[in-house]
Amino acid sequence: MKKLGSKTLALGMVACLSLSACAGKMSGADGYSEIPDPIEGVNRATLQVNEALDKAILEPTARGYRAVTPGFFRTLVSNFLTNLKSPVTIGNQLLQGDLKGAGNATARMVINTLAGFGGILDLADEGGIPHEPEDFGQTLATWGVGDGMYIVLPLLGPSSARDAAGIVVDSYADPLRLYLFNVEDEGLDYARVSATVLSERERLLDVIEDLRKNSFDYYAAIRSAYYQNRQSLIRDEKTSGSAAGPDIPEYDDF
Image (cartoon, rainbow, N blue to C red):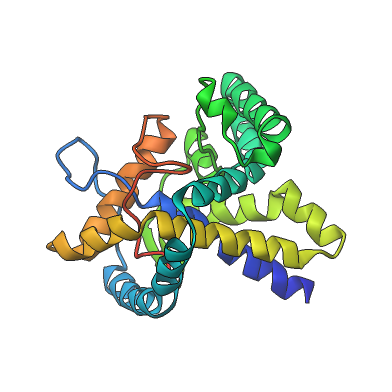
């Protein structure tokens, strides 16, 4: 049971992060080179399956979530879920040698947890300490590991060989996950993963719809958006999205 649960959790975490990771610029005129895509045929087929599942399951669920919950409540949920990821963010900041970033992430966690009612209020951001998403894929990049080839993961969306490996490491090394599995409360962790996926999919509803309608080549637009956004995150450039990136997903993600 635990072995199966761990695999499920890892997939869930990939879904969460890849949802936000796909947002970014869509033109190739900004100096970014394209990520290698030697298995484009397989990736395109996988995207078609992901799209069908998204339209049948995840998108309707996200629209229902938006319909029955006010915007301020959805923001509180997103803030809380982001705060739960703080230990992973701090750990990756330290692995990257970014002591200032680790200090800011720690300050955010302490402020939002203690004064923000467990993280539902992002008081740190209001106080001038914005969220800076960090993951092990970014850490590997700072260590000189290349992207590897572009991959559209079944159910989970766009990634690269490096980033997919990094997401699995993050999910297994997450202190909260380790604690919940140790006390045999795996269900709470599955609920956290599910809530994160739903929250991110709702946030990207309008962006994905616009991308589907207006992209000449939806697959190529997603690939470019994913790669450019990842490069921005690695370089600590400001992006237009919230927790982990701007607004153009990978659906990509379910």
